[in-house]
Image (tube, rainbow, N blue to C red; front, side):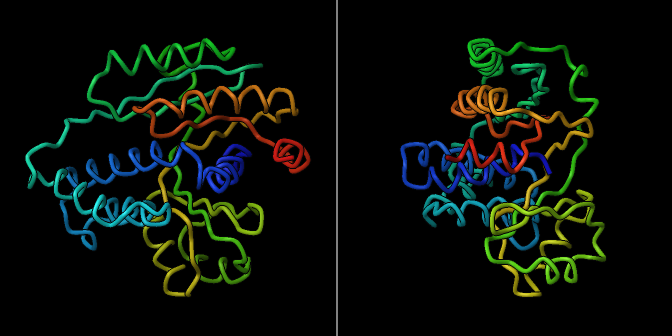
Length: 249
């Protein structure tokens, strides 16, 4: 798994009580609305909605906010925005590839804001296809701290697990996206808690970053993720345990 995924998990824990929580909640609520509009309001019958709600609850989004998001997405409140999914491609410092996933109701605003955040932080935008070719969709499950590696593998071994890597005191499990729902259900059946289950874009052409490059790229990612329309940022940057420890310090 990419070092950025590990850094993002660490950063999330640190941000739990800071001003970024409101923005995180807004993005999680937007995901719930879109998942409801796409697959219906039945949480148990809509796996995408189930995962969006689960992630929101893990991030302490109030139940009333979640319920209203489902009602807006279903049209029950009549005020749901028409969000469009857009991917932007670019390069960060030292040629690190980046994919930027947006949910927006204003494409022009998103394009301008993303371009500004990228270029102001030492990056550049790229033509469609010039970066995305090296990324593939994968199911990514972040397992909570204290989980047992053998127990995770035993529970999920029949569900196309491609990688299981340490993430602090927990683990990041990568699998075929079509198997993610079954994999997280298997974890639940085994009594293994997890933080999130998402379909993400994972690069097959990782670049090992030194501390200076990693610091610059993470600064750029923070600026991009701070934009309201941005849902996720993916890179091909890999961060060693030593570099990650230096960054966290």
